[in-house]
Image 1 (spheres, rainbow, N blue to C red):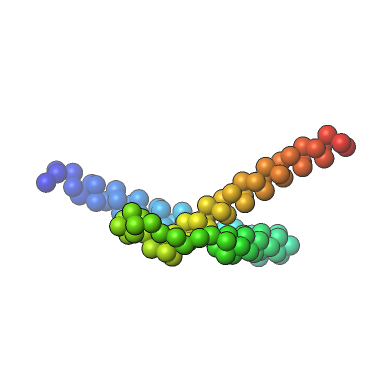
Image 2 (cartoon, rainbow, N blue to C red):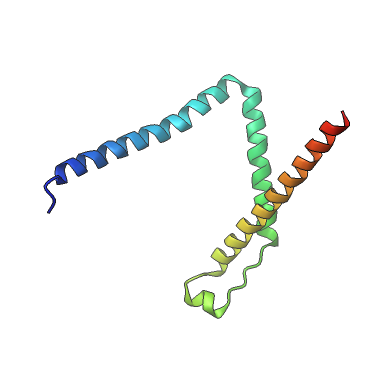
Length: 111
């Protein structure tokens, strides 16, 4: 047993308290700001809604095939489909951001 076991335990408790406090502040303050400015809150909800729609499309087009090797590792059809949806959503976001960057640069060059 370590001699400083009590100090390590106290340090871990302090870490947990500070971590929970930081998470709460990171969630509460943006929500308070969002309710003070409803226009920004509506735009944020539109963005979240768009992400949900993109995930739904990704989920619909992803496959649920599982090979024998994957099944031996414990991967189910549902987890395979979730992984495929996550990858498809990543590709949509990647290509969307590339198109957005190209559009922004071209529109700035033409002004």
